[in-house]
Length: 145
Image (tube, rainbow, N blue to C red; front, side):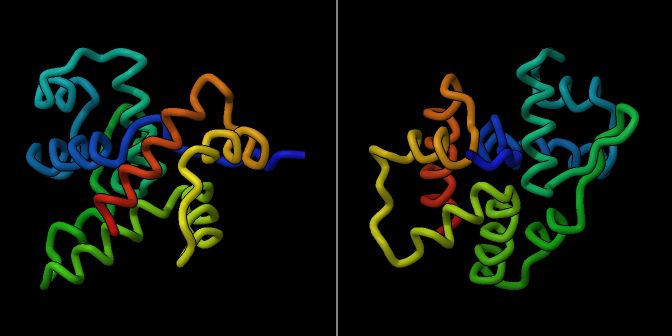
């Protein structure tokens, strides 16, 4: 029986860009202002980015207001690049599926060709999105070490 865990449906890079936009707007803003800042329309796709930024623990979202998180502030105000990478990795691995996969394949070769199948069979990721989620995981590993 596959596990039913939360996973992001947008890339870490898009989620981080959203958090940067919220930060530029004072650290807290409405969905409308964030969309304007990012030059995007409010749509299902935009709401997916907000949801993913929440899953990466970069922002909180309550009653139409997006607020940057303490984790985002730690990344932004890192003392060194090494510390920044550590905080970025922590945020990237916040979604449980990503942290489990990271621990499972730590020090081993990542089976990129099988990753979408692993997500479907073992984590209950929908087949239609498994390829994208797999890509977000591998891209995030490259970005965050």
